[in-house]
View 1 (tube, rainbow, N blue to C red):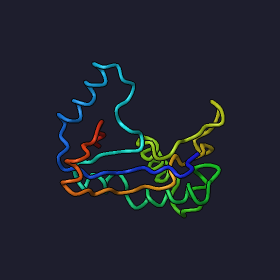
View 2 (spheres, rainbow, N blue to C red):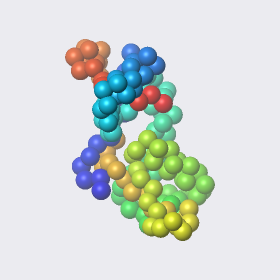
View 3 (cartoon, rainbow, N blue to C red):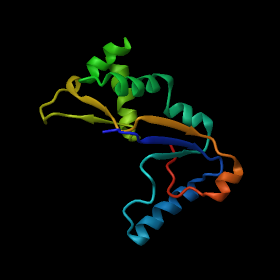
Length: 143
């Protein structure tokens, strides 16, 4: 599924709530389906980037790509970590779109849900101010 796709976490200290909602209302007014690339998350602080992509979540992302576990339980075993913590971190990664949590059927138990990576790499992008001015971000995601 992931092929060579890249997820980008971009630091932009100029991001404001106003600019976030300006993109949202533009989408509502014009009827565009989405103005934000799915592989881009823009954050206004480095602290936010670290809160989203913690070390355990980076380890999970790496293990999902490399080990391709059959389910969350197997992933927790690969990482030698508590299932509950791995499950919570997988949910965060799924919410931001880095992985998908696949159920085989409606009767699938939580321990049988398969984590599947949507991307091969995650890049932390810290562009200079002049780069941000030249190429303004469209559609901003702020966590």
